[in-house]
Every structure is written in C-alpha cells, then in structure tokens.
Image 1 (cartoon, rainbow, N blue to C red):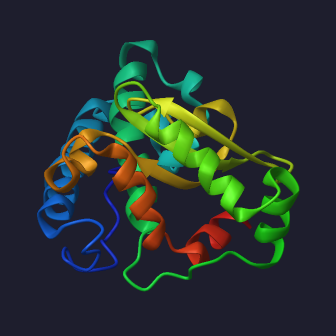
Image 2: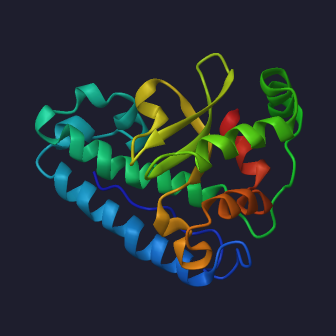
Length: 201
C-alpha cells in the first residue's frame, strides 16, 4: 500500500501575506514529497504490516512495526501525517472561530480561546529545535496542548491531533527569517476552525 500527500486545497500563493508562495511550493512539493517517497521506500517488502491500514493507524500502533524500520517509519511517516494535517487546517478563507462542542471543550480546558492560542504559541515559540505545537484530544474528548520534536506525532502517544503549527524552519524561514514568534502569531489568521471542528468529532 502506497501512502501519499494530500491534495493541496488552495493555490501556492493563497495564504499570502501570512505564508508566501515560495514557502508553500517548496514545503509541499519538495519537503513533503521527500517524506512520502522515503516512507514508501522504507515500507517496501513489509506490506503484511501495512495492508489495509491508514498511515494514522500505523503511527498509532507503531510498536507493531518491525524494529528494523520503526524509527524510519516514525521519521518519514510522521513527516507525511504531520504535514498533511498542517496543510489541511490552513485556508485563505478560514472559519475564524470555533463553536459548538469544540468551543465548549476549549472553554472548559483553557478558559477562553485566547488562552488556548497563548498556550499553543508558547509551546511552539519556545520549542528548542524543530518540531510542532499541537492541540490534541484524548480518547475521552478532552483537549490538551503539547509539543513534539522532529517528526514525532501525538498519534504514537494515544492522542488524536486536531491542530498543529509546523515550527521547522523550512515552514517559515524564507519569509520570517529568525522571527519564529511572528510566524506563529500570524498563522492564526489562516487556521480554519471548520476543519479543526471536523477533526475533533
């Protein structure tokens, strides 16, 4: 079974001025595609471990993958799943605020939406090195903010990711240079809460 990147739901320049066209093009067609290619290469000959399984299912049960390729699957498979989520929750015409069940849970866990954003901003901006800031839900629907290093994914820790900020330098450096905090704060302008609500259900 071959795994692939999502079809980008907007044009390369659609997220300007918050993320520039060149960054989206390189990020999607080069960085993400490289993860796809390396993942599929690593899984050649191991079809009995992957047949009929989504990438998310594999990463959620990573201990079932042979040790000889497990770290490669974490690195490359995480790279595919994490990027697919990241690109899917961005939109040039986003729903600006959550509502309904998700908003109720945000208020319960964090007090306000602004508190949630501040917490995600903090873990993202203060991350040492590459990784992601996340909003995840547990199996009971409770929300939590966390960060992961490199291409590690909350899926492998029993959480379902519903929102992420990619803080690898290739996600922002062409436009923001060393100003990670500016990128993190600006990305909220293009996060689509409609998609996040869909992932929470």
